[in-house]
Length: 490
Ligand code: GLN
Image (tube, rainbow, N blue to C red; front, side, top):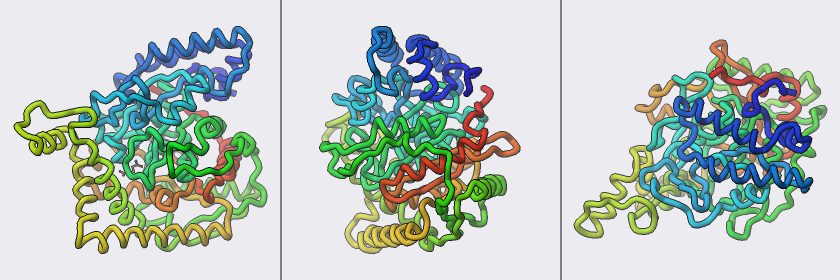
């Protein structure tokens, strides 16, 4: 128990229990988090919009209900921040883009509706890379977010604000989105837990689309138990999202047993490549040994098409993005240029002024890959390779229950370090992208620190809709280690 920690540093499940026992009040907790935002967010910039008035109102309401002894859902009164790519009724949703700067959604995303049913205290909308394109948060049109462990370093991306907020205590938990690693990579850089559920597990209704066949919403939390609690709240079939899966949702907390005896853990040789930072490799190998000592069965496996994953992703994701982002035309949403003579000029200037350089690069790559004459050579080919990557996993999961890998080749890099080298930036997603292409669930959880004190993460991938086994292994590892209790000194 971390009762000596300030409220904003404690996990949701502890706070939830303390609220119910009357040891703390919801308003007191909300105040602690909003004060924390005031104290550190000028430096970190985890938020694009803070919703203190709305949050404090819910907090007061939850206190009233608690005083009356009403039974409340597990996340009632928990201060939670939302990546600014998820629509919130009446509150700005900018996607960290100039083109959506004035956009206020008329409806709540399904995940928001579900969280409001739990009576969470909404803290605000979190910083991110523009339209979720990026790995460092430096593509935010409103300025980057910083890593709370070292403010000269990036928090990762694109859900950088979400990960940094949970690490710094400007939120107790957060939602992010993951198209190629955007939940798991920042979770690893900031030393928190982040899960991308199976494609279809969580409704994408109200998630602003980047690459619709890859996007998935998921939690960023201070520990594995909180991850299970948020999954319980947000998973499930939704008739407003035709790709959401109509499969039963278990109670994910039932998988939180510190026991891995007999479970088969696959280690893909292709994920321990040259160029991986030695301290990352050492930490992940130590985690493997530890799980083996705890009774898990470690199996060497092969995922032979791994080397094509980044190239495949950087055809498919931009192709879908170029189509999805066609809707920002200055007519239907957000920003419109004030100085255009005719309609074509209005489109051109609105998009020219509204989108940042990385978004433009993706739209151009995607449009090119989809154009006639190139479609077969790029897009169709990429789809075929995507199938091969999926089949690698199908084969591997005949022999193992989960797959364990590093999350990223390096710990958090410095602001500015990769900005001018898009290819190097893209390569930082090499270990996270395959799960998106195959639609598989994956978690990132802390498994060590570098000598400089930067967090290191490990990734567990599971079979489709088997988030439960991932949580079980993650929980067992977490309970045997101190990493989830470390907090950055800010
Ligand atoms: N970093 C990857 C990209 O830039 C992944 C982004 C994401 O998962 N949203 O596309």
